[in-house]
Image (cartoon, rainbow, N blue to C red):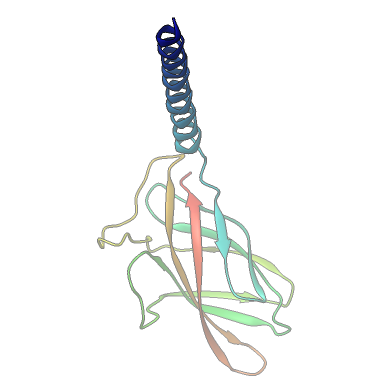
Length: 157
């Protein structure tokens, strides 16, 4: 009779072990599905004194950036580029946007953004582009020039 109690206990533990494993597999599946559906949050990170107030990328790859400047000087943005490629030389496309201190202006890149592969970063509405923003500007009153690099994750519209 004592041998049957041991067998009963082993069966009891085996059933609960299998049930526990099933629960773990279900929880792992829920965790995977939940994380797979996380949305990408568009964001734009520039240096101090320059801020992205709004931004998006057109389906043809051109970036539209509303930028606020609080440098304490009027500035003239002279170059702008967005790319996922390495751009150590700070290559930018010519633009000419004059901004007073505290002002918000829209900068539209007539040149498209580029992917790491060198292809134009075209996309469908709702998808995302991730890359770097390169901006060159000069302070209008002092003549000092600056080159900055920022990061952007923008939604195609």
